[in-house]
Length: 440
Ligand code: FAD
Image (cartoon, rainbow, N blue to C red):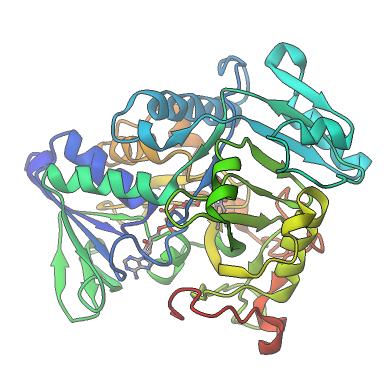
C-alpha cells in the first residue's frame, strides 16, 4: 500500500479546523496536502475569522475517573491550553487577561455556580455588587450599575485569543511546510464530493475541476451538511456580533481587560489592536435558517448585518456595564455560523460508509479555542490512531439525532430563550450599518 504520508490529502474548508488540520498534517510529514475554500483566506464566513474568542480557564480536575465525555473534554482542553502556552505558531495570540463570569437571574446564577464551581481555592473572587464588578477593570471602563448581576473573577489561567491572527498563523506555517491552498471562487468552492466505487475520491469545485485525492477531510463547518448527508447530526446555527469604534485614548484605557461574560446577556473583551473596535456578542440560543417546512434543514447564508433584536441585546449588555457606550453606532456586525451536534461534542470520525472520507465537524460553539491541537486529533483519526475514548465520544452517532428536537436551546441562555428562525425576521428588522464588510 502507498505510504499514507506520500498520498494525496484534500481538506475541504480552510477555516478554523481546516487550517489546524493542514498544519498538523504538514508537521507530521505529509507531502501532498491541498486545502480548498470558496473565499480568499481568511474566509469571510469562517467562524474563526473574528478579532477574538474566549479561551476559558483550564479545569484542574483530573480527567481520569469521570465519564468518557468529561474525560475527552478535559483532556482536549488541557492540551489546547498547553499548546496556547508553548506552540510558537499560537503563543503570540493568547492574551491571559483573566475572565469574569456572571449571571443575573437567581436560577441562572445557581446553574452557573454548579457548572463552573468557581471557588476561592480554584482562584475565583466572588463579585456581588456593582462596585465589585467595576473593580475588575481600570477606572472609567465599567460605569454601569450591573443590576442583579452576580459573578466570579478569575485573574489568570484564562483570557482571549486573537482568532483571525491565530488562524492565519496556522495556515501560513502549513503553507511554509508545503501545503497548497486553493482559495476563492470558483476554483476553491467545492460543489460536491466525488463519489466513486462506494468511496469518496476527492471533490469537484465550481470551475469544474475534479480534485482527486487518496483521502478527503471535510472541515466545511456549518456548510458540511450541504456536501454529505449528516443524518441530522449537525444543526447549522448562527450567532451575532457587533463592533463599535473606540478612540485612541479609550483603546489604551481598555487594554488587557479580562473577558466579561454574563451568560444571559453576552460578552466582550478589549478592543482590537488594529482597528480599535470593541466587539460585543449578545447571548442567545441562536438563529437557524429553516428552509423546509419540517424545520430539518438550516441553510447558512452570509450577512454583514444582524437582526435588530440582537442589536437590542448588545445595547442592553452595554447599558448594564458601560452605559457611556450604549448608544454608540456599530461600525461592523455580522452573523456567524457554527454547527451543533445534539450533545455539543465534536464529530471527528471516519465516515462509516466512505472509508477515504474523514469528518472534522461539529464545533458546537466551542471549537475555536482548540485550534492549536484539533488538527492533531483529525490527523490521528485519518491515521486510525485516535485515542479510544475520543473515538467513542466523537463517533458517527446518527442514533442520537433521531427525531432531533431542532428547537433545543442546547444549554444556552439569553435573548428570548428560544432558537429563532431568520425567516421570521423581516428585512426592516435588520441593522443597516454602512460599509460593514461585503454583503455576501
Ligand atoms: P469554520 O471556521 O467556519 O470553517 C469552515 C470553512 O469551510 C470556512 O472557511 C468556509 O469558507 C469553508 N467552506 C464552506 N463551504 C465550503 C465549500 N463548499 N467548499 C470549501 N470550503 C467551504 N469558540 C470558542 O472556542 N470560543 C469562543 O469564544 C467562541 N465564540 C464564538 C462566537 C460566535 C459568534 C460564533 C459563531 C462561534 C464561536 N465559537 C467560539 C465557536 C467556534 O468559532 C467554532 O466552533 C469554530 O470556529 C468552528 O470551526 P470550523 O472549522 O468547523 O468552521
